[in-house]
Image (cartoon, rainbow, N blue to C red; front, side, top):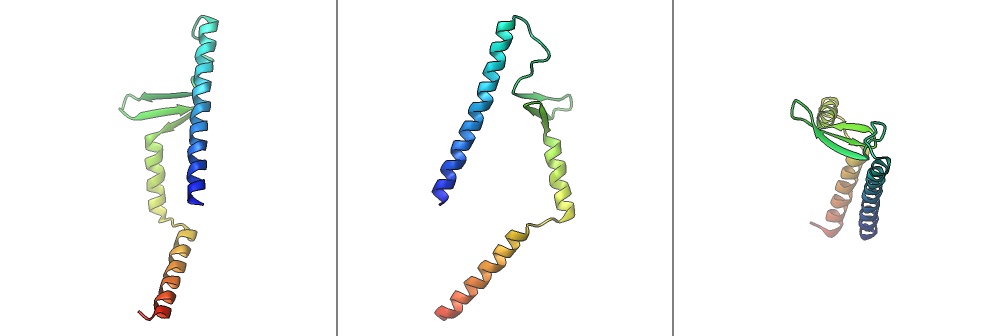
Length: 106
């Protein structure tokens, strides 16, 4: 099951990368065919640095900043958010572990 999931994840990642690469190549081809740089044509994927030295990426026109990720992480830590399924899984594993230990006699 894990092997299948890893293969599926890797295949999906490769295909996504291929789609982004294809869109970028198509954009470059359209610019070459047109003969001049048109501001309406934007790249599929760009990475740039801001004046403050932060890294900013743009994927299909959506901007992603590193500070956004840091702010989201701080908000989650402030709310002390936890995953219900993770805590439930830990408790369930502890119960199974203690039941097996009692059954074995340790």
